[in-house]
Length: 298
Image 1 (tube, rainbow, N blue to C red):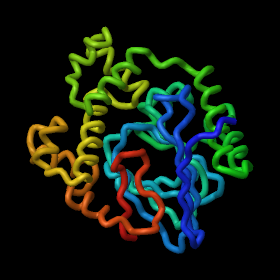
Image 2: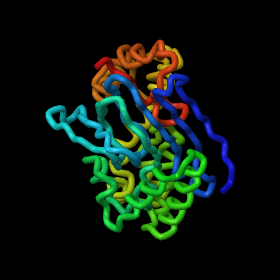
Image 3: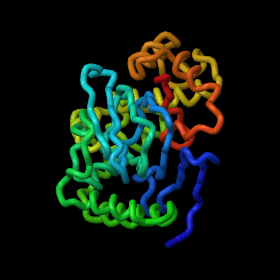
């Protein structure tokens, strides 16, 4: 196995550890990031997960359930140990008892379509248990990862499995992959008719294939990308008016309305709640370089 750069962080008291790594180059840009984690906290942990430009595969090595509550369906509580979720425009509250052990893989939505042969619109609507998907290969991979003694070797196993699955799974349309890359590069500001023209499709065809292979229509996906970019800039301390102008919002009021609609909090509450970050705590954000999450008081 090829040795890779890995960022390993751990609490001196042994209450948590986290290992972050990039996937093998042959898997990029479809596979975005890996994280291995082990938590043994003495208190429950509640996080607000803002919408991000990725699908998420979480593989649990032990039976510690997570309770998920979507902001658009607050009356419903979903319990998962392992989970597979798609691109969403709403926030999710995730709560667990303080103990977790496993690995998380962040994926471009079209890569999730290729790896799991799953309609991404369904994954955007509901997190599923990946161990229940047909074929049993995810359960077998989870068992193999749990039995492997170090994070480096686990990342190698993930590389090999995902490369094999991508080679044999359904092929996402090249137009969808290109359209997602263009929309992502623009931070969600590229007009949808121009995006359709750039890939040689009509708007209706692009919308249909985006729903299937990305999980949202292009307009909704663009909202997620704009808000992700705005959160990143706000976290750096940029004024909200300047952020609104830079990220494609009509004005500051539009940014504030969208922030509240997509996270359930004001920008001030979300960004302010992240600072100061508690020293010595486990990682908060799910994507490298992004502002994705907020630890909430229990």
